[in-house]
Length: 260
Image 1: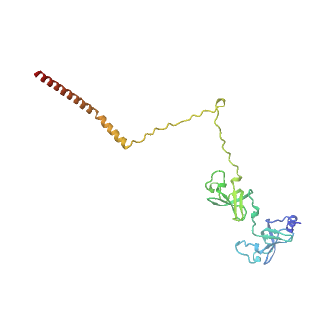
Image 2 (image 1 turned 135 degrees about the vertical axis):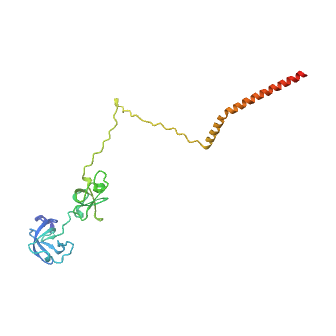
Image 3 (image 1 turned 180 degrees about the vertical axis):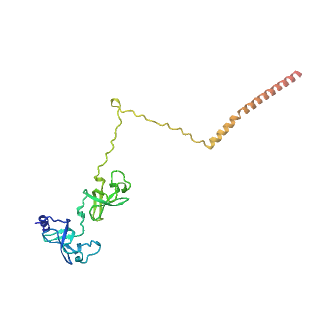
């Protein structure tokens, strides 16, 4: 058996969140009776009345705000069998139970931060489009691609009712750029791959620095090389002297033998 609420919804074109411009029929301390064209009374309870001059101020007496035949903007809160409850508080477009991943919704950007953009989608809290979800290309700051007041289509990525967080994406609804196709090297005749010239850089010969011992040895060898002519001249003089001495000794010996 269907509930009274379902029967009312079926029999009448009234449902929750519908907006009406109604006429005040009667005022009281409890609230305001409003004509919205329904066959059952539509009642605006004092808890749902807003002082348009000071929306944050609590309302003590609706009779001070309205009089008969005044026009008032209201939304349907609940449809029952014998009455309709109204409110002056604009209802949410999406309740937490209404939001599901993969949904596509429309929204307006209301704030930009370095990490992303906040989007008003008609839920209890604005949704966040992280900077990495704004476009397929790299985005350094949200200001590069969007500004406050922009209307955008977004895709719901994640809903966390406990943390009151809604994660959205813009790029998920954008066409992804085409990927560059890698072209293989062209083949030569008979299906052979074209030769690729390879350049091989010759390794540079590395000569280690000489040690102190090597430096000293080279200096000594250089000095010895420079002194070679002196040694040769001295040796020649010694050979001549030796030859002269032997000649004198031979003549002296010969002379003594002649005397005897």
